[in-house]
Amino acid sequence: MSEDELYRKAEKRVDDKIGFYRHLYSFISVNIIFFVMNLVFSPGEWWFYWITALWGIGLIFHFLRTFVFSRKLDEGTRDRMIEKEMEKMKK
Image (cartoon, rainbow, N blue to C red; front, top):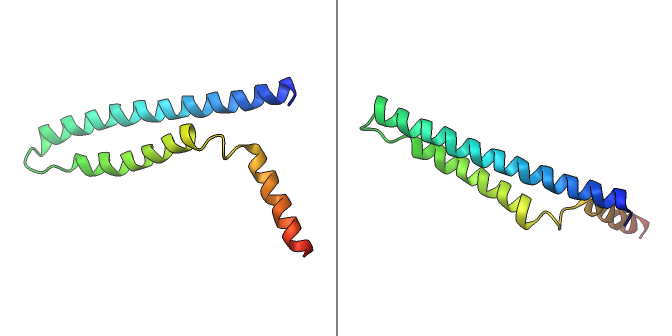
């Protein structure tokens, strides 16, 4: 692997991680605001946790894609899948 290819892969991983941390920051900030709004405007009805739960599921998937499965789904995955399909089509 050349130095340029290594740099591009590292750059993509760093960008993915920064994207996740921005998502996490937004999740925390916005849900704090929703919690306060819920307390102030409708203290008897707890609706903010639905938003938190559903958005949290999305955040979990983002985490998994960024930190757990990032190496498995690299740029070479697409090329390998194309080669497999071509082999199947030749048979």
